[in-house]
Image (cartoon, rainbow, N blue to C red; front, top):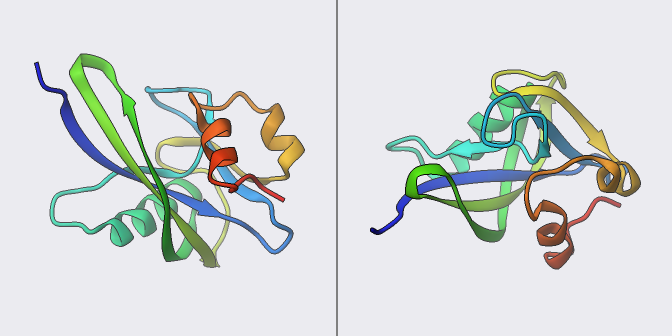
Amino acid sequence: MEAHRVDCVGALVYDDQGRLLVVRRANEPGRGLWSLPGGRVEPGEDDQAAVAREVAEETGLTVRVGPLVGEVEREGPNGVLYVIRDYEAKAVGGDLRAGDDASDARFVTRAEFLALPTTTLLVSTLDQWQALPG
């Protein structure tokens, strides 16, 4: 049986001190784990619009979406294959607060990030992309 592809996006947002924006997931998959803000691309939406919408919904921040950093595939339940494209983004407005699918949202240093319980392969993927905070 072929996996059902679900297009998703994520955002790599750094503040002026080089800290990375992360959210604690309020829902499955990965409830309670920390990850990048992001989610599914809605029908009729391009990646840039999806990134901006997801960041706003989960963190309250308005972002300007930059270049693609990388793409990963993660298997989900019931034969779902999440195809996740992560983009650089710059916060240009809004007030940081957890919202929508996030139970917490904050900027973290590299040491703080490495100490958090994160979603599968997030740390190694960001390390591979040379995208860890700091």
